[in-house]
Amino acid sequence: MNGLTHFDEQGNARMVDVGEKAETDRIAVAHGFITVNHEVFEAISLGTAKKGDVLGVARVAGIMGAKRTSELIPLCHGLMLTKCAVDFVLHEERLSVEAFCTVKTQGKTGVEMEALTGVNIALLTIYDMCKAMDRGMMISDICLLKKDGGKSGLYEKDSGGRGSGL
Image 1 (cartoon, rainbow, N blue to C red):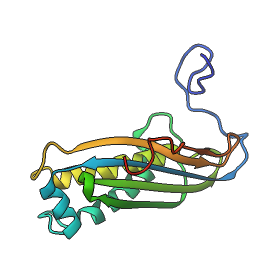
Image 2 (cartoon, rainbow, N blue to C red; image 1 turned 120 degrees about the horizontal axis):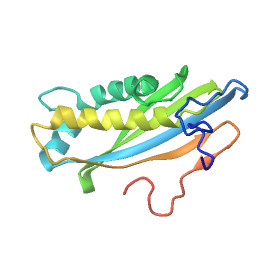
Image 3 (cartoon, rainbow, N blue to C red; image 1 turned 180 degrees about the vertical axis):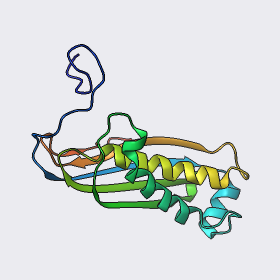
Image 4 (cartoon, one colour; image 1 turned 60 degrees about the vertical axis):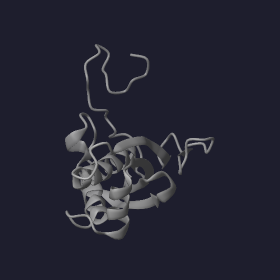
């Protein structure tokens, strides 16, 4: 099946056996953006949204999402995370919030899906908390920025035009 590890020889879906892999320190960092209208940007940046601390709630939601990735993504291994952080950068010039999720573990498989899930859940939480002010918010450019550890080693997204600050 073209090297796809989540399928057996007959094409059936399967969870990859990582039992023989070495445990290594692993890290993944993902990010994404939500573009909002001026009213939402102001409410987020000033902390005046009617539903409360938007970024605080989104941070906790992103961490919770990362921790529950194996319940959301079929065939994804459940991992003991040693670190999960969600951070935000406000981009006033483009009326957007950039979310970053950094996840670490020591294990036999990587944490890319956890970082990507954390970013998605954080951004969806911002949407949920602010949708009464702007139903046209747009979530975009979610991607893996970095992963390290394991057999494949270091991956860093090139800075050739699709990095932070799009």
